Amino acid sequence: MKKITALTIAILMVFTSFAFALDFNATVKYLEKQELDEWGILALYSSGTDVKNKTLKRVDDSTATTDYEAYMMGAIPKGEDVSDYAGKIVKTQRENGKFADYIDGTGEDLINAHIWGIISLYAANKENYDKQKALIWLKENQNEDGGFGVFTGYNHSDIDMTGMGVIAYSILGLNKDSKEVKKALSFIEKNLDKKESCEGVAYYILAKVKLGLAVDKSLYNKLLQYKIKDGSFKHLKKLSRGNYMASWHALLAMIDYKNKISVFDRLHDFNKLKDEKKKAVVKKTSAK
Image 1 (tube, rainbow, N blue to C red):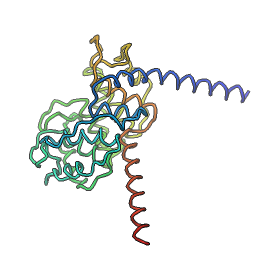
Image 2 (cartoon, one colour; image 1 turned 60 degrees about the vertical axis):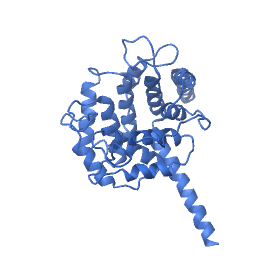
Image 3 (spheres, rainbow, N blue to C red; image 1 turned 30 degrees about the vertical axis):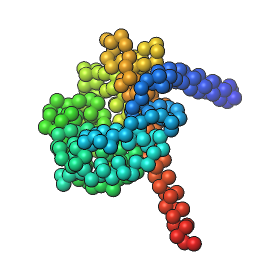
Image 4 (cartoon, rainbow, N blue to C red; image 1 turned 180 degrees about the vertical axis):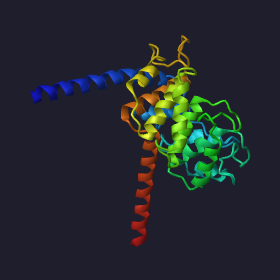
């Protein structure tokens, strides 16, 4: 009887893995045909695709901090050294803890400049900034309803931005039991069906995985409702065509759901191990 049960479980596991592969393989193929930016590269990397030879345009002439942060999210999976870019982002942190909107250290308006500063530096394992001040600033700019707006002082909370905010909270040391995290998740849960989009559902999955929370199959199935036959995903269910942005969001969420580990944790852990190996080599060389 035990052998039959074990065989049944094994068959179910194989079938589940095959079914899941069908879910994301078509999306991988769709993205590989597109003109990739850093986000498409990140999504393909998360799926196990080799992205080392993918082209990524540098942003050295940009004045926007978010451009440097985004670049890092594509460059890290490619194995590039992002120390210079990370250093520039760290230098934008203002006295109040915010990562500035512009690379010269000015600008207080963009919530995402702060959040992606936290996420990109974590992914690179280059977190030599004032994390306590960064956390205080993020808490102070969380709306009363638990969500985050696109701009500071903007009380219309956005589901995508709130999902990003939860990921940043996790990086800064908060967990599923922290009141700020609970408020943010509550906002998403209350508003997901009202303001639903593929990206919103994807960020909810990404946030839950980052916190180590179980993702219900119903939430995963909700994401799949945006998928069309060519493997792409639609921004809204009522649309008939998929698009690049919705598709890379969806692929990131699908892979996090499958792996039960955040892509941001995977990048962080890889770079942490790489840095530790470098230090060990330097120490060994110095001892000779």
